[in-house]
Image (cartoon, rainbow, N blue to C red; front, side):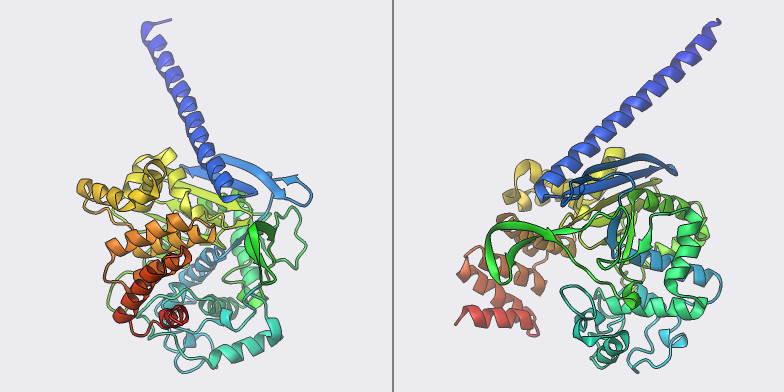
Length: 484
């Protein structure tokens, strides 16, 4: 055999061996992260899918799907994805935009009749990005299950919410709101001429071949379904000595299922993402619009794209995705041709805490461009008490290193929900250090100080918060209670 041919064959063999070795190492790193998170958070069961260059390169399942009968999770197990449903609603709206049936800038009153006067100017895009200011219909339904409670039917729920005042002037602020997506579902019904759930099935699930994806809740019998669990610190008003894992029950009335209520598998969602990126559901220019931030009235970008609220609008490694119910989530990295899907059956599994760390197993540069992921990694190594020092050191290396106020606030509350109050205190303290002009950072810090028995310091924080925002009614109520 000629020397040249031998050299080429050797290089090909070396390339293949290197690729296999790299893939195995990446999978090992991913499994290390997943097993750590499952252990620390007490996650019973989990699925993961990784998409790279348009193909599923990792699809695995871990743990128990059904604790009652010790049924293991497999790749066919179906998980509740909750508010991840909103991303599918975003795609459905954009399909109708492509057909010229919906204008994102048009007021919702162009499509729906009998809306309150204050609701009528709200645009479709403002509904998609939660800057509508509408009252939230979730507060007139049963708060424990999201069902209709004593209201009895959809008409009564709408009658009650329509009588409520606006939360703020449209386009001025952000407020996560189920009314927005209930209205979007109605728009899809009206414009498409068929129920939105049917449109989802025909225009998305069947196109992509997503056989295990459908709407449903705790009232439905769903084959291969992994029930959702949650930890509770009290039951029936009685405090428990230790957290107890219990069954979660949830109802999603049909008219609210544009915002929540889908169930799926990591494989189905991965295939849906691949189809999106290859123009099978939307034109690529439409997809670009779907994944862009909107804007407030003053021109400042929103944190949401169109139905996609787990977003990273940054200079490099931008990412868009969605999370649902504190248990499921996915992130797509358009510029890196990478996507991560993680589904769990625990409220509090919060894959949004570690999805970027998993992505960094496939591209280490991602972690350096996401302050929250970098902070997660460093705090694990150096301890939460060093949070401020770590951020200051990172800022010296990279002036753009700035964990977001809302990201830190949400992380702090997730830590509190798991009983990690000391760690949460350090995160809220960091948030004050980074955002000293925000009244909410002082309110949150006061809450954790009070929970940790530091009453006098908590009083100072609540007073500071109220001085900065006299309309902070929650702070006033807490301060009045603890000063009695």
